[in-house]
Amino acid sequence: MSTFYFIAFLSIFFSILVITAKNPVHSILYLILTFFTFTIHYVLLNAQFLAIVNFIVYMGAILVLFLYTLMLINLNKESEPRKSNVVKIAGFIGGGCFLLAIVSAVKAFNGSQLVILQDPNLGLVKNLGKILFNEYLLPFEVSSILLLSAMVGAVLLATKDPKTT
Amino acid sequence: METLTHNIQAIPLNHYILLSSIIFSIGVIGVLIRRNAIVIFMSVELMLNSVNLLLAAFSVYRGDATGQVFVFFIMALAAAEVAVGLAIIVMIYRNTNSIDINVLNRLKW
Image 1 (cartoon, rainbow over the protein chains, first blue to last red):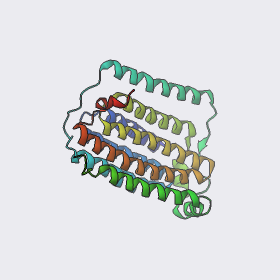
Image 2 (image 1 turned 120 degrees about the vertical axis):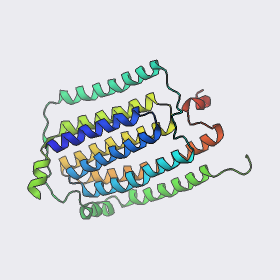
Image 3 (image 1 turned 90 degrees about the horizontal axis):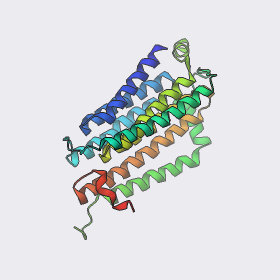
Image 4 (image 1 turned 180 degrees about the horizontal axis):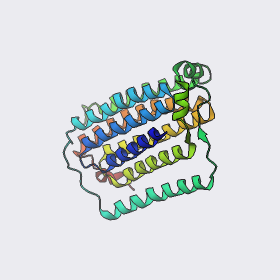
């Protein structure tokens, strides 16, 4: 039980480091650590399929894409101009108000049951695959079209236009 | 193995909600206070992940696997969003030689 609190502390700590690190490369490395703690959360919830997908897709694909872009446009130096303090304080107040609203709403419902896994093979690949390919077959196919259009759009956007340059 | 997962999981649902909302608001603060476009994208990823964790926790709490299927769809959507967004950032960098979002205030009016 205390494993959850330790991992939760680590994920909050690393996500604070993500938004406060000055160097964007350090920021991405802290984000990788944050996603690793999320993977541990999924393992603790016995959602094994999500743990594997989170590990492969987020830590393997998306963050490598981030790192690649950052190295490609050569911004791995601390060149970011700082925002003024007024904007920073306003940002903290905005995020804090959001957090306060959610926490007070949670406190208003003070009955909190425990998260207990009734069905031990709930998050396994077999169970999820049955649901995904029976009830959610159409959204699955539509998401493949989404990925295809995203790929076409990314290639189209990132290639240089020969007429303008 | 089953007793292990039962012992690990005796966590109130409120604590999952609190953890996810803390990480979500860290992401909101990151979007508001940073000017580097890539760091803003990373904060958006942080917010998406906190929502994913909360969906998985609710799915285990209700004993319903639909929440985990939704997390899978959100991950596919996040991958598409990152690919297009980073392509846009590369194009912006090519045109303005900077990824400071304050350069992009032409879209403001």
